[in-house]
Length: 390
Picture (spheres, rainbow, N blue to C red):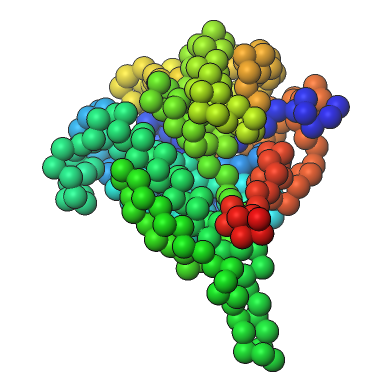
């Protein structure tokens, strides 16, 4: 079966898993959550399952179960390693899988993010991406002290779109052959092939060029999560991959329609865009066992687990059925969030993946060396090289 008919799969890595009681499960290894070995093991498992990429969650404050304030809880995992640095540490230990750290546009400078992700792309030899996110929480803003009042939601996403535009221009600011590296003539770089980007927008004014040579992919893959109109707009204007949080197939279909219409309105309908469904998964060989395990985790947490998007508890075959159903709503892939990484990540790679392969719906080997290649995205030329040539 052709690659066009195959699903793309990614997995979200965060702490011990998505469920707040995941760290208390057998095999969770809470004492190792802040070690490089722990993260390297997770990504190695995902790569063994031939997944397209992993995402690394991150934020600007301690995790909280409250949507608008710190919860001060001590019975749940709190604290994270830096996502970009974690991905860079794991990169030399892997060969094929994409590495997509989360970054927050709201309180970070696009110049810093552009060179960090470009560096990750060099270290991984073309497997880097980023997941752009925003923050409207006052207590996160107080870590930086730059803004007394959070921006309105629409403005946050408009700023994030500018952030992505600056990042991409900085990636383009070095032409592919700007580095000469000729010891005999003493010329390391062709200065005519480094370009000022001279970006001026409502939120940023950036001269450029970057200090990091152009990434191997040209432009690493940009992704974003959408669960509402403003977030859909960011995906439509700025993303190569959008994650759609919807509870059912009808909701997924409505979200896909809204994003596609917004992309057309932005004049980008001809540009490729992958839309991935978001699901949190609890997998076992028996449906009842999966439900029982979720119930036991809920009892440990003291409350029933709930998500903005879909929560699935069942067998790998049942999950494969659901993914193929959701695909009919316009999804080209899925970002799966293991409820308990120690249990559900291997259940995905060793249970779901073989099931999808039997159905001809997932790859049996990596067919490309870069993340853009795995996703079927062409490598773009530098806009400044094209302009100079014209």
